[in-house]
Image 1 (cartoon, one colour):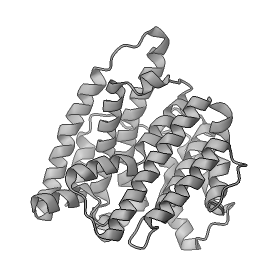
Image 2 (cartoon, one colour):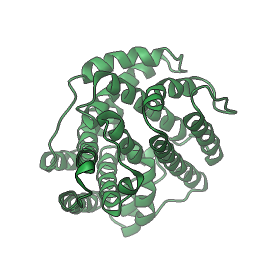
Image 3 (cartoon, one colour):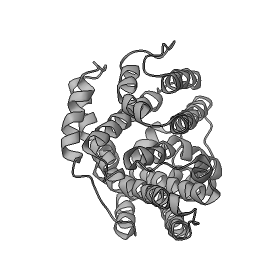
Length: 320
């Protein structure tokens, strides 16, 4: 049911599909990079991580990135997925665990890979320190702060979800939509647009209401599509944190009707996204390229997530 719905939405998506020509080579590089850190994963778990095709995800989000920059982004995204795996699931981290992890991660991001951190050690810290070197060396302090803020927002969402699961709280639809904007990490992916394009935005433009509305709407689209694809997995692990599950509970609908309601919401939101994209205000000739790159990057995040969610073995269990 959800597979057919996801395929229909993918087919009708008005955003064009693209992928980096460096994706395959980056995936091969990534497999070796991951194995450098002696993660506590057995061979089957490492193969499943490879089958997630995270480099292809990076390649779909940033199709024009250089080969070196795509490796950096793929490494960061791999770290993110491993971090989320540590936080998620029925026996995942507690809210306090996530809070401590957040503090350690932010210390590395704000003070550098060599910063000493209590409670954040081991392979995940080493992976972050390694992947963070290029952005930290190349990007200005305001961008680094923006990236750290986006990571903090994401981990705050992970903490709230963990606390909800601990106390058995199932979020209502409006509560879930706001929380999902954090747990998706889309806002983290948006900051990397500037890294790979080289076109930086000043804070007042980056946080302009028109760009914020576009970013939030794109976040909803990619998050809700992923919820459709991962529905069966989320029934077991999410504690009700899935748009379809939230709709079904709040509106007292059977699963099939809840899927239909989620699809209808997605279609309406895509129409809104296209309207917002077409009406971005003019910020002046000196910012034309940076604004255009950002708007295009948000659209790439939506379409790239759609394509990758259907292609990655990360969600294959939910599609079987």
